[in-house]
Length: 150
Image (tube, helix red, strand yellow):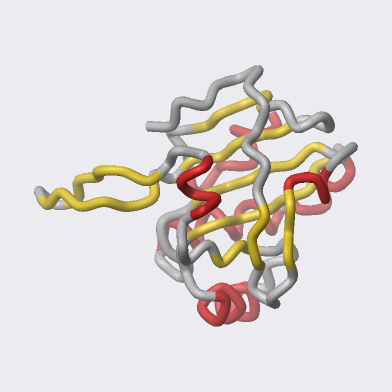
């Protein structure tokens, strides 16, 4: 779906997280960033993915990674999801899809024979200089950490 590939400069972005804080790509300068896009907070697959990252959060920190999630959910929905599952990382409430569109992950999807537009579950690993070093389009929600750190 996305046209971004390894070696591309990650799109510069600025968006509000669940608490109303403005988060920019430049905030992560000098750090590796795992930016994971998911279709909808509190759904089974998205919860499995976020909890897998949560359960391995210390490992990510030890390896110099920050984690940031993003979807088109409202800040309130993101905050409720964080509270319910004790997620230790911020979630962008990208309701206007600015970041989602910048990364090119919005488009036609199929589910149970119906076609609709939505977010393609995709993770970008961005290096300390803002360059994409990995694009994971086939996310294994229950074992996503292994995909990222392999």
